[in-house]
Structures are given as structure tokens and as C-alpha cells.
Length: 238
Image 1: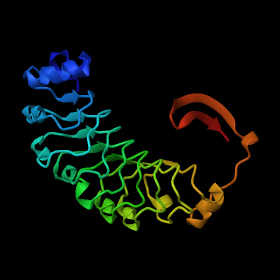
Image 2 (image 1 turned 90 degrees about the vertical axis):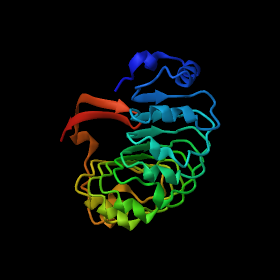
Image 3 (image 1 turned 45 degrees about the horizontal axis):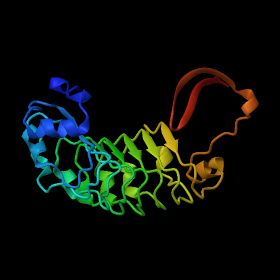
């Protein structure tokens, strides 16, 4: 996925200059972090090749109404900007699979903003109080990250998201988990710390999927499997 011309090593200001000079023709990936307040129209010169667009760390609050001209766009990141609403134009980008708008000021997600092929949606650290029922139509959805919002519930229509594998809802306002959630066949990673929930076992029982209590002393930790923002994961024998 690396762009041609060695553009992945250019400083962002140089990248913008290169873009405006037409030197990035044929690029499949573009990253611009240089205090942008408006969407550079020169990006459209890459419409026939651009697949990944990263505009994180700017001062953007809107995307152009004709964003769908980027007809090959699969991934867009606009984290750490000034958006108060997830742009509805995203739903018109028919190839778009991954959307990342972390750490904005988003209070509203229009149903129209959800593209048909959506697989991953990252809205961590925003101001959401609800999500649209239309999220249930995103049947390809695998990853949903919503930590650090003000959500009380998930739309029941999401029971149709049977391909969902990862859901992060820590630091919200959930008092219970919906019964359909733990019945999702592919859900493998669920994080919900920092909510006013009952004990995890009681919460699962209320959701219709009782969890056995396991004494920590009965577990034998093994090899490190991975680590990241969510913690350290190890193999264990019970």
C-alpha cells in the first residue's frame, strides 16, 4: 500500500507542496497534517488511484460534498480535528470500508454517513449520546470503537451486525449490556470498563449469557500473545 515517489517519507508541508505541484500522481495513500482548515481540492487529482486518506491532526470541520469523486477510497482518518457531526457525504463513498474520527467533538452520526461496505468505525473520544438505527444495516461491520462518549445504549437493530468481532464501549454511561450483544456469533473482544455497570458476571447473566467465576489462583499464565492500549494479553491454562 506504499505510495509511489517515496511520498511516505516526506514531511506533511512538503507533501502538500508536492501534491499541489502534481508530483504525487498515481499515489494510493496520502497523509496531510499541516493545520488544514479546509479540504485541499488538489486531493481530487488523485481520484483514480487514492485508497487511503489520512487528514488527522488538522483543524477541519467539514468534508466536501463531492468527496465521492474519490471513487477508490477505502480508508479515511480524520482524527483530532473539529468535526461536530460525522459527515453525511461519507455514505456516498461506495468503496469506503474504514472510518476513523477519533478525538473530535462529534455529537451526531447521521444515518446517511454510513457507507454500505463499512467494516470498521472508530469514534473514540467524542460527545455521542446515541447512534442511528441504520447502524444495523452495516452487516459487514467487524470493528466498532466508541470509548469515551456519553452513550447509554446501542440501537437494538445492531443485533443484525452478525460479523461484529470487536466492540469497545469503555467510559460511557451504560448501566447494562443489551441481551442480543453476547449472542453475536463472532464477537471475540468486548471492552466496557468505566461504565456504571453491575459486576461483569451479573451483567452477563442479565444479558442471558451467565459466566462462570474462575479463581485467579487456578490460572497458570503462559506466553505473551500481544499488548497495546487495551492491556497485555497472555496465554493461560485453567
